[in-house]
Length: 312
Image (cartoon, rainbow, N blue to C red):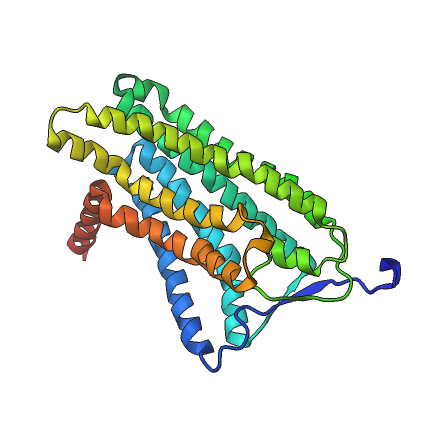
């Protein structure tokens, strides 16, 4: 049958996790709790950076953008997943599915560059402290943040445009909890090799180059830290970038596994698990890591809580 005689698909059915044998409510409450904690934690970090004089530095300015990207990533995928878990399926229009995929990819690429900018900020602060304030001034912070967002969503267009031209003729059931490339590729009745090739090839500079840049900056940072004569000084300096290193590790660990291995390299179940780590748990870990390991965040939280208790 020619594609011209086939009916066009205008909506998709997300199956989520399929048949859960009565565990739908428990899983729904579990992921809803994680989602609320994620949004609350990241919103709290943004408010702390905006309101606390103690956090008026480039590092926390970029951290607030990282928190916003985590909020965008979670709210773009998790609500549909919750609907699929609770109802057994979630219906999405073709336009809604493609929009979700574009926001997901743009946010993910943006976060890659944000983490690179944050590593560059730590490099300047530790390796070139005398010129830090002149290089990383308020204008530089704004320009770098705008650049990362624009670059992330513009680069994603390279892979998104061929995918948006996919034709979906018969099947409309997506065995996933959000619209991602592998299930869309599987359903498409168009030739998908070009899109798969473009995504794989461009994932190298988009994902690996920022990761390599972070590694190089931290090599210089570690060398500088090792030259500090006192143990206390080394520990104090390292503590300013340890949280960022943990966030980078969790983010790139899931991302490289998901996108640098071709779709035939792992099963759909494994793909779902990796996607869960990336879209649900990593955005939750970021505020937890910065809250538990960063002394400035702890001080700001304590001041806010004391102020609220005093007003009460």
